Length: 221
Image (cartoon, rainbow, N blue to C red; front, side):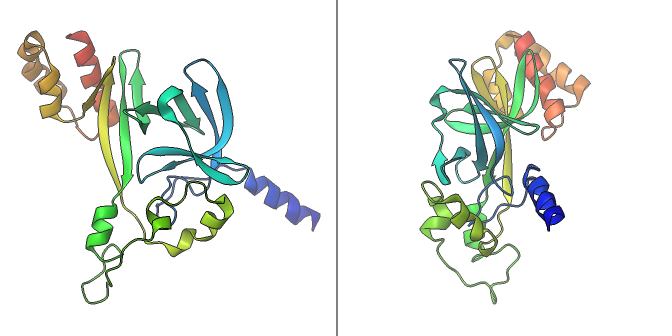
C-alpha cells in the first residue's frame, strides 16, 4: 500500500502534457500545471496554471477556484519548457526568439467549426445533432471549482486548434503573412525584400524560418 501511495504521489508531481482540448476542457494542458508569472515590476508568482483556448487567456488556481489572470501587468509566463507573453490582451506562446524579436502564436479552439458539424468533427449530417454549447462549455470555467471542471473533462466535444503566428519586433506585432509584413516595411526595406525572400525561401508556418523575417525587419528599419 505504501508503495502504491508513493507511486501515486510521484505521478502527481509530473507536469501534464499538452492535449486535445474539448468544449468542457478548453485548455492546452491535461491539468493545471506548475508555472511562474513574472510581472513588469519584477515580482513573480508561482501558481498552478493553464492556457484557455477560448480567448487565449491565462487561468490559474486560487484555493481550488479557477481565476482569470489580469495580463495588463504581466511580462512573461512560463509553464515547464513553454514560454508565453501577453500581446494585445491575449496570452501568446513563444515559438522562437532572438535578441531582435520573437515569433509567437495564438492557439484558439475552433468552436465555429464544431458548431457547423453539429457537435463533433467528422460527424455526418445524419448522426450529428445540432446543439448550442452550454454556458459552462463556452466561458464557464472562471470562478468554478477546479475539480468539478476536471470531472467534466471527458464529456465535451473535441476541439481542433487554430494556430496563427505573429512576429514581434520592438513594439510591433505583425501577423505572419507576406502581405502583412510588406505592409509595415519602409520603402528602403521593400527594395531589398524580394531578393531577400528569394534567397531565404521563407516557410510561413515554420517559427524558426519566420524568425529570419523578424530579423530582416529589425535590420531594415
